[in-house]
Image (cartoon, rainbow, N blue to C red):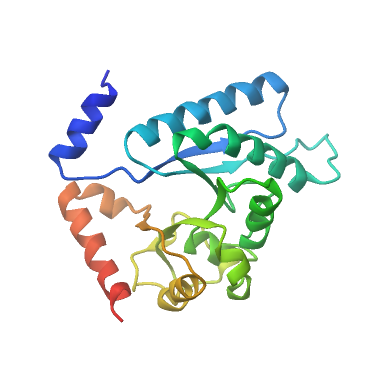
Length: 229
């Protein structure tokens, strides 16, 4: 029952800022009516995020059903994102595709290819170390050419086990408690020009069970070593 002004007041009361939002998926392969409804919702959410001061909407994609053969599914996704990117341009919010949140887009390389082929400067990529660890993504894929498309970065570490055996959500641990060389990964992003936000994203029952201020303090403390030079 809250309105936009209520949310703004709540953020101000707690000295917080909205930097972005999340939408489950941009529908690319469904019937036209379902696609239109989904795309209208994405526009509405971009308008909401923009009015709250945010600049990014993270989203995944769907894929074709098993009975449908699509010669170039990346082209379909890229075209959809290109159209959406231009449609939401006026909101001031950039669409960032999250790789591994899709049956098709499973790596940094593929997400970057979608952003490139979309033809829209308002389409980028969400980089997440958990998905990086669990997919065919490689450090070598983070180049000057690819990093220019990265519009937002999540922060987390991963339990010390092979990526193909990990659950990309349940096996997350706080930065510094896992097996990822986050300083190397994030350093490479910054080396090639990334200057955006780094936003911690955890899925942890123990953190969820804590009072919010304690969980926030614990996560904040885990980030500090990554800020040291």
